[in-house]
Image 1 (cartoon, one colour):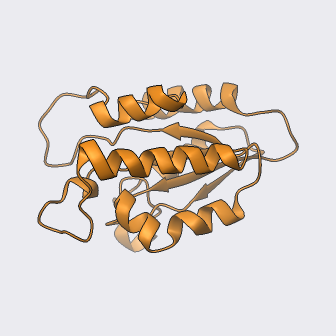
Image 2 (tube, helix red, strand yellow):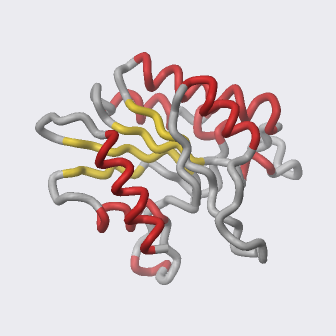
Length: 170
């Protein structure tokens, strides 16, 4: 995990433009969310990202547990993130687990349609505000026994290829 964070941080360092305050914003679910000491050892990758960056890089983690692309947008969390973003900011976008929740229709976003469209919306709106969107594939679910890293999902790969947003693999 530490090597993954270091590799991601190195990639981001090369993507960040040179300006006074470099910022990385995170739009994601529980896998990246911040957790208090009462939840230890539960830790989102967004909590640890700062450890691999230069001290002057600010990480603004807006990840919220239980959110899919659908609910992150419908609850206004995406608009709130855009409202605080500044041109040149990097936006890490990582969803997938909750989008696949067929049993929870309020979260569900079919991969080939709504999930893809929501990712494309996030890319377009980011770029339209002068932000640098980066798609991050979700890490394997805790219940998974599949070896890591997993291949990039087809909707993420297509969305990334369509709009030149570099995906980061977990």
